[in-house]
Image (cartoon, rainbow, N blue to C red; front, side):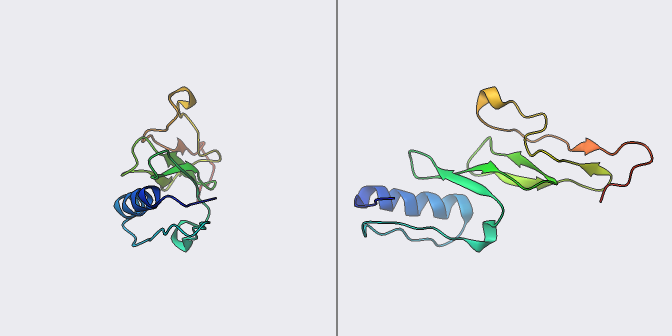
Length: 111
């Protein structure tokens, strides 16, 4: 991605730090690449304000992204499961709220 606007990169740096708590610096150098190993397996996109928005999670997690500050891949607990991170998520709203994972069927073992 081309990043030649210092106002954009300043906003991006601020929003990344505020939403992730990580010290990530963006600089107007002509291109940008972001690699954060803490978020492996999670898909993000940058909003128009430069804030990262969580888009997807691995199986076994539910996507929660109704606010930038509280977005997460919510791990399903004991005796529950999720194959699809969008289970019971209102896609029409464009975001997913906190919700419960599906309960295991009687006699099934969910780990």
